[in-house]
Length: 316
Length: 245
Image 1 (cartoon, one colour):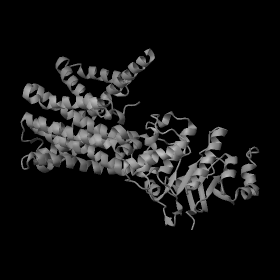
Image 2 (tube, one colour):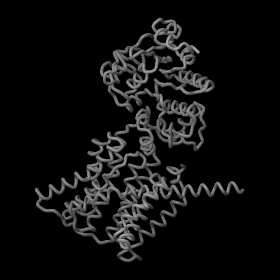
Image 3 (cartoon, chains in turn brown, purple):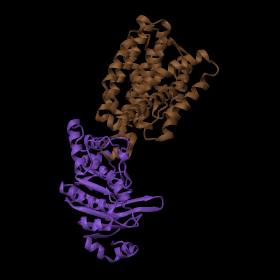
């Protein structure tokens, strides 16, 4: 219950997070190539999961359009990667994604519940088929080559995006703007009658969330070097951040980060060990975690800590 | 000039005319009561005034300005706040945050957070709710939830407050407290329009009352005028012999 805004004021947690960040940032110096590549996927999923939870966590609007925003970043990178410097390409990818989110948000954020969910998922298919049609009939290709960057560059770019994102989310959540976001999820009508311009806040937040997904996509494209619409708009990207955020805990800032780390590693491990059953095992883990830790891993930790404290009180 | 003026307000839901050609005006500073049997259209009228619904015809003027068709947040920022018949709180937020939100986004939005927090704390005290507690809104009793809603509405700094059945479901002690609160709100210079079923409360507190029946206005006047009105006795008091208790 107490989890939410209040855990963030916790200094030891921040010191631990900073140490971990330093450890991660130094990884290319001591870790092998495989580890660095694995960490790139972990960071990528962290960016997507945190961006997703930034909007969907407090507002309760479950968006399944992550792949559309991520894929827009990938395609921006594929189109402009040859002609523009990389930082500009990343920015462009981010802007293109948030532009798409603004457009989609303006049309769909009046929809509620399952209708919004279905529409956002439909958007991914729409983008995929639109780009496929465009490439085949207009540019006459199906795939594109993206100029590669070194693993190190990809790693640090992704880490940089994650750090900026976490800072943005942290400060927004502490502000009255963050309070307004939460109030929309709690009771949208009451929020509107309390002076909150709910539509503007929803659309802006959706666009910011898409901004970071697009940036991540633009960076990731350079690691994959060859992309086509099916790679760029992969439905797995729609569901993974949702699962990761639920698994880690949607409300605390670090929830989706921890969820992304565990899930990405788990996925790699299961794919190599149980190539035939990994989806099955994955599903089972998901069901168990939703049943037994509805507030996610961090919620569970919080619950255990409270229980221990209560026991100590009872004993003294 | 009246603070709020409705002319020819009409809204239909399918074949049902929920509010039918209602004219009324409320003067600055008064407590104005809205009564009528269940389904008379009282809450629907509130929804028209606060822009939760748009009327099919007619208009609402607030402080001389046309507000029909504006968005709820705009109307709130102009100084018209409301509570809800079924409480609509931010259940998983604590008491202070519930009120703080309205203080930060209401009439004088963008005021700094420290100031907004002070104001929210002052309002919690005003409605006699504990300030420094970590209690979540959903954990409160109904009586306290209704008072929290009043504090939240007041935090938007309204000139006019719409109270929708604030006393419904409360025990006699809580009703007395709520009546005193309404008068305290008037003392702050806020005009009040209240929907109420608790007759004793409405007859004591209100200066003027409007009676709705099947969506139409059937009477208007001081409590004694209204309670002596023949049509009102027939459709309302007559239907419920114990309504005066």
